[in-house]
Image (tube, rainbow, N blue to C red; front, side, top):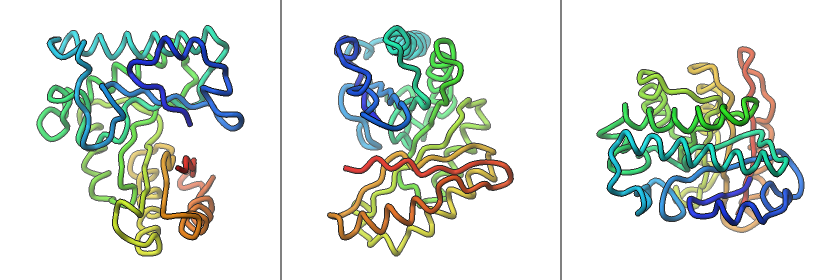
Amino acid sequence: GSWLQYSTVRRISSMSENEITGATGPKTSSRNAGVSWADPAKQNKPAAWAAHSFEQLQQDVYEHTRATMQLLKDNGIAPEWVQVGNEIPNGMLWPDGRSTTNFAQLSQLLNKGYDAVKAVSPQSKVIVHLDRGNNSKLYRWFFDQHRANGGRYDVIGMSYYPFWLKQNYKQNIDSLRLNMLDMTQRYGKEVVVAEVGGVDTIQIRPMAYVSLTIDHRVVDGHQTNAWLETF
């Protein structure tokens, strides 16, 4: 997968398809609305949007996403997956889209991103991505809320980093598998492991192998995928 930050639209226009999507594999665009690399602890608004009303912020998300998608299309690139936001259990574009206080607004912002993607590339699948893929309680809370607020998306994305969990992967990888299967059954969506990482090759190799055994498993007609983006 590739990472296209808030401030890099101009740079994208000068990149080759291989630079944007990787030399092989499905084409993936990750849309980050923020001032830096986004994770659950960093989801602040860009300075240019800081004073905007919520109504304007929704339009900002739509126009920025649409412009990026159009630039990709103009360069002959049609992403298979587009991720709106990155690791957003706490929401994005704080404080307007903070999940613990403004989930309805978060869903509206995500829907604007979804609509912008589909306006340019209807076949692209939109991912909503959280961290801690082994945490079923977190995922049920978030996606129950998103569903209750009319959230639109195609794929549930998960990160899985045993290093940050301070555990050996053998202690929680089965929870990841069960959560993936639960998500397909509960919401009728495809699931992708969007990020995974561990300590050195001693840990990452067996973890990657176990994750890949989940690939293309069909549960009640829905597919789960292991898309491994290792670092």
